Image (cartoon, rainbow, N blue to C red):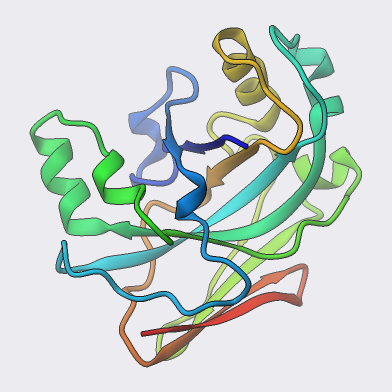
Length: 203
């Protein structure tokens, strides 16, 4: 399984900075926070933010996928949160260095339950994601495909031009370039369309 994190909307509050197509980095499988286990705030940066994302699971093998067929490769979606080292990512960006260190590390990604939805509902306005971190204002996002820069079909087509997408691969679409700071002794909850999908403690 390969996890592609599309950073266009994930690391910048102004997605207009990236208008040239999908820009991605990879997150290893060890980056997944399993089974509602607690997230332990690391000590390699001073500020970690919880950033809301949409996780799209690929349901079939594909290479060189045409845009008009891309929706056929979406098997399921889930709400997700990526814990980003916000101060580190700013320093790396200023120096023109890769962002991987700030958003790809052990247990940096929490994903809720994957559910199958008609693609029109996924790319349209039928999905609402909510991230609630105790003590912070809840983040909510409903979108259409034009709000995802780039869109789901554009991303699948672009990724498959240079990579073979495999069954079970995950594409993460960031929905906000900012998020609540995470503090120990709090609890996070992820919701999809109002239903709790995952809850876990932050320590």
